[in-house]
Amino acid sequence: METGEDPKNRTETGQTNRTDKIARPAKTHQDYWKARLKRRRYQDRDGDTVEIPEWHVRMFHLGRETWFNLDTANQAAAAAKARDIFLSLVSSGWAATLAKFKPATPAAVVGCTVGEFLADVEKRSHLKPATVRRYAVKLRKLVADIAKVEAGMKAKERRRKYDYVNGGHAEWIARIDGQPLKLLTPESVSGWRNSYVAKAGTDPVERKSAERSAATVLRCSRALFSPDVLAMLKVALPPDPFAGVKLKDPGPQRYHSDVSPEWVLACAERELKAAHPQEFMALLLCLWGGLRRKEADTLTWAQVDFSGAQIHIRRTEYFEPKTEESQRTVDVPPAVLDVIRGLKKDSTSEFVLDGGAANPAATYDYYRADCTWRRLHAWLKDKGVSQQKAIHALRKESGSLVACAFGIEAARQHLGHGDIRTTSAHYVEKKRRIEVQLPTGDKAGKLRAVDGAK
Image (tube, rainbow, N blue to C red; front, top):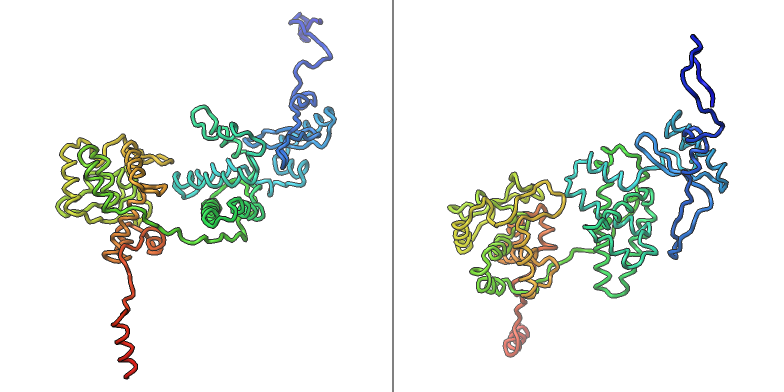
């Protein structure tokens, strides 16, 4: 213990405790980095955990972070190198530091993580938030499979990704978002598609279903890497992972009706019209009007023209049409209009269907009349509608009926499709018998005799 003195007047100013031991080393001292060294682990193809013998350190600087392999199992040497990396970051920045200490992955190739990429797409691209969310689900599925995120996990751990209440889903998303985007390459993407389809085996039905699912995942993921999206991004990107990847077209998934719409309507009039008017109204809007669930869910009374017997599907403060072609006028039969008029007498809401408040900014599938839609879905399943999206099957039945009576172009306009091929391939089924009429029996014999005489 020594006394400190003012050099000018030689008076005592305090005491200084001098010691050779550094109690809390600074970042410029290698002892600071000893406690921050890590031995990283990974899971091999067999699901076994393998520890890397060399020390690693994670550096944070200017809002960015990355791991550095210190290339030594000696702690003192590793700490000294970690200090040098830090000093390089402070003095020279990321580009020079990466070029010096990670020469195999220079700054131009390092790229970003999946989470950083998706956040930048949502912030800077022209895509709607709901569209980004749907595409992100597919991209995360692709990354999770390629990175083998579930490898070695027990069934209970895998199920945690569906736990939205206790944080399991958030942990799952964070695990995938932390993966480097450079995992996606043309080779890994093509390999994923082939292995995904191969898992379906040789069953033609299962294999075709797997081909469609794989095509959907790749098509949605590729949309995030379109030139007009990438042109607006600021994150460092790896080479295009879909360059040269040809998406196999599994062909259109034709709609096959498994119930009679006339029978469904008769059952609804008997079981729903009086007891459950909301479900009955929802069914009529989708079956007779061909409305999408979202269109019916946010339909306001102002969009119903009782004098002209029409429903106007248009952009409102509560609803954004799927496409510009989705804005259309739907002609309503008098019987359906009478049901709508009767429902309006007891309504105190500006919406046709009762429910909660509208949420046009929702980035997930939000429905104000969700309880009504759930009950209607259960009722349709009970009536034998086997389609996974039973309510959407009502819209397809509506398109099929219009196509049968008025032609495919009328069905396209009725459903609000931009391309008639969409209507033909996915939304209509033959409702009338088409037979080739040929003479049989005695008529066929007489016809042959006449032809022989000629």
